[in-house]
Length: 138
Image 1: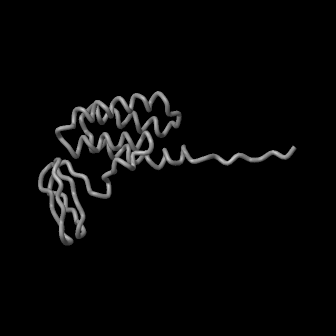
Image 2: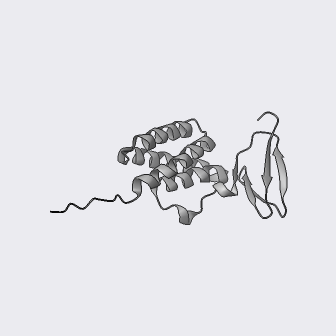
Image 3: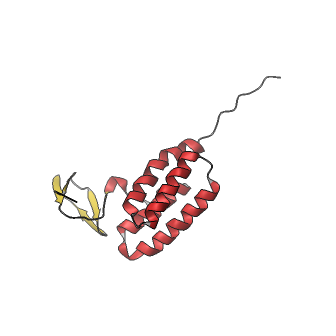
């Protein structure tokens, strides 16, 4: 990371950095001066929100970033999940995104894989919404 990355946090907001959690008590700007793995609180999914297959995959990848001691176990679970999803999903855009996420996981780039899966979440919702069927009058 050249020149650092400046992040502004609001009072009470948390940031997860290299497996650690920082909570600020007032509005603050921090500058990350070297390469670190971080997640902003608004990108952290809670276990109770893992209600769809892609949300479950997101959570697995998230655990790779948040808890370094679980990195390899979560990576293995995420790779298995991707393989299962590739076999069951028919939407071309989701399939393409999953293949890209899989490649990123193979390259041990979980942050980029997490972003890729996050971008797929709206597509999953669109594919699972009930379809309206027209009623034919006989």
